Image (cartoon, rainbow over all chains, first blue to last red; front, side, top):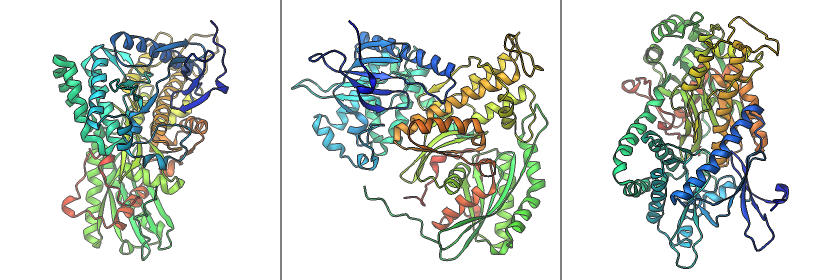
Length: 251
Length: 363
């Protein structure tokens, strides 16, 4: 089976910091379209450094995705990996990012050039469309992160942009999918898990200042999933938060 | 979205502010003028830098001593260059923090004394806000993602709802601290600045050595990277005195290390800035802080911004490196919003986060 396609012809969905994301028809219809993440060359970086980083990140990302799938974490299924071309093909998730659902606008989506409008989007409307309450959504987030950490996988860039709510089929339960594992790695350390949670906490505070109290619900569900493993993570998370404040004393 | 009205009204009369800065090894004083027609003018910007001998950093006590010795001359120069008298001032602004304790205090004492002596209101200013406001004023950037990089701070900041929010920052040491400390290891001079000498040295470097690349989400970490770079100086291939090696020789020169260090840390900084830009959908970047005067960093940021169809705003050393005028600018903005620091509150603090300040003057 050959995979002949041109990225130039494909629909570009978004340009993130790391890569461009395309919606590609790999094989003739009715085979479903897939999502291709292309790590293009970053010309600001030294070419050697850039090649090395792109390659290792792509490799790590695809491995982590497979591990997630094995552990039952909701992530997109891997369809294609091309290390030299910097391509990662995954299942196309039909849905909306949590960031947008919560009314924080969308990240780097090309269609929305005028970012002022997006900020005005009504969160309640989106929540209704997906038939979940804010509280349930927070629980879903906590649940997925809990599963992820139980499998000793650290996402590394937990933000609300990197979570999607899948469009519901009939009566199927709401499904939250974690995406973009570009900075993910394996670790059993409590420290890494706590930092991962802290990154999300800060993302909540900066992109959804109004939803910040809801973050407690995320942690609540996370704690339930982790069970006995929660206590050490909680203690470390408290430490990490303090560390954050200490930072300003540097210099 | 309806743009909110600019809360900052034009002043009814010309306003003059004296800014005093001494949070690190520079003592600076500057006079800023805001006119009723909305224009602003930098009337003077005087600075003196404390340079410890090569191989040493600046210690708080010695730095404070330096500030105490120079503060009169710096303020007098600033006032006379501006062609005004102390009585013409509307307010006196000083750095409340963050920074080194002893130097901050030495300048705060002077600010309090002047305030009492000439009966002028006192305005305590957050150092980081000073950098950001000066950057916005000089470059005219509207709502940029701010990369604040200096010897004491490394933060990626964006404005939202009356706060400069910190999106990413260093988890351990600041980037300037990392560069300065490495300059000390290889014995570069502290004059005019260790970071500047690294920049010069890096231009002769040819070889990119593998160094840890530590970004965590939008945060970065430099301490391990610094240790790894230092470790190369004990490598068998390291030649401390060698300047330009022929290509065949397998040796590591100080220039190579400076080059590798710069390429790696700046790539990390540009990466987290780009993440923040993608995250909030901004196309402007403003680089402030001492490290911001590094041309290589500006160049890399420029390439990144261009790829995203955006713009980089950077400044030269007069306004990038700590100075009094930025304190005057940020102070005058809060003065115009009716803010004043009482004598009892005119303390200074080593810990004063950027996001603690209510930014009343922006929509």
